[in-house]
Length: 611
Image (cartoon, rainbow, N blue to C red; front, top):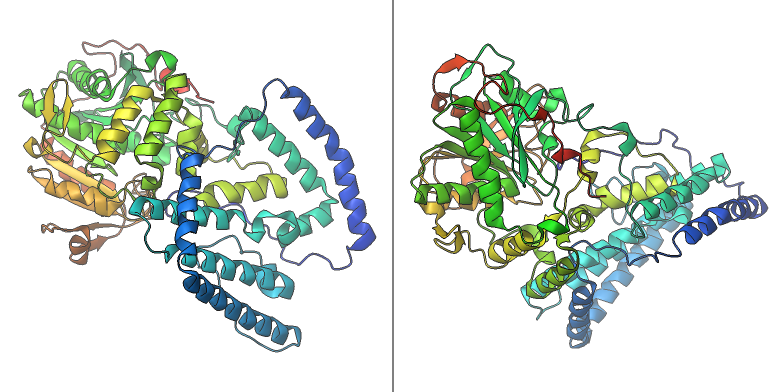
């Protein structure tokens, strides 16, 4: 998929449920399910009696705030009943067309569909949704109602922009949740599996559901992969190296060279601390750190600590000083180099941009270049994430964080999953709970489930100064270490890589950095999404990228004149980095310099799981 999420393995059986399995047979199956599953439910209730189930998590969203948005929507709808009546009449006409089309098909005639799912919608991939008249009617009925509901909400006038975002977003969440694919009685694949297994799929699905509730300590934590199939350091995050520095916030890993000589200037990567660093080191064939090492770079990456309640007051400035700057200084000490390249991914790139401005103000010339990967610097337009961020919701979130000292990892994970709910929530609900399948081992989804906490002080600063007030884009808007941060003061070369289908850092927003930095700058756009667009090794030859050396005021204007290139942007980045990386020198082994090896890669911090 474009955003890096995997496809659920398809069921090769394509026949519709047998019509003969009705009445007494079906009742017998369901009675057996009820009898055999009752002890599972009773066992779960007994074990959780002392810890009552909490409300279903909505990530960073606040249920009271959402309810208020829909109350305002209903008030606006009531003021214009004619518009609502017109919408209902439109839905009625669509249903008349659907009845007529269905009747013709039942009489053996050909009739075009009134509505079809989009090509990207994989919920209705089973052929029964097309070939079976009953399921085709259910499918089209759902699509018509869903379209009507979302269009009616979208056309309501008089709502402020933030309220409109909320009702549009959560109306879609509501319609996605009510899809017939999500219910056993209206999903042909589930019905077929239930008949063929005599209900074993539902028994196993209930077991999976209870296990996920237990794993989430009362909150439903949907399993996306077989987490027992992976161990950090054994089959993910396996590139050889050593931890050569450690602070309270990070471990710095130096990777073992694979070439006899290396560029004099090393590179330090700052991953986001929302997730673990090994998204850039999943397997040898798609590991960015392994690929950089093979190109002759002394490569370092930071592994962030997973905060607990003792780190509640750790702030954004601490992440800069004890994180980015400490890593830079350690890499220089380990290699003896006078400068380093630094690359920041997502939130790590936001931190790196501020760090570069801070170092410039301090007259520190140790940066050779900076690379921002899918990183926001101007937060004027942040896409659907804006739904979760306004003054009321941030205040309520701060109150929640005050109780624990951090934002729970599950809240952050749920927020991102809601942005792609059909792929990252409902497809697994169907597979795990209705079809009773075991989650498929997949390293990317293991990493996605290995999320981290966010310290209270840091996250509050980040949300308020970046998302709410967009102060990083304003000269002097943010102060770190007593220094007013001005991105326009940065003079080192900047490489900006963004992703065309990114739903977390929209590329038209990341493009705004081209107007903030005054230094030599190269903007490159990769195909695909926030993960797959960045983790795109040349050997895969899967996605293309676009370049345009001419300046443009907007991303749209830039793209009109851009040239498409096959293959990975990694090769373009290497061509940009190499000429600025100094002479070739003897390869440096981790621990041979001023910094001695502390432990083997991937270190200890990465092994701390939040859930």
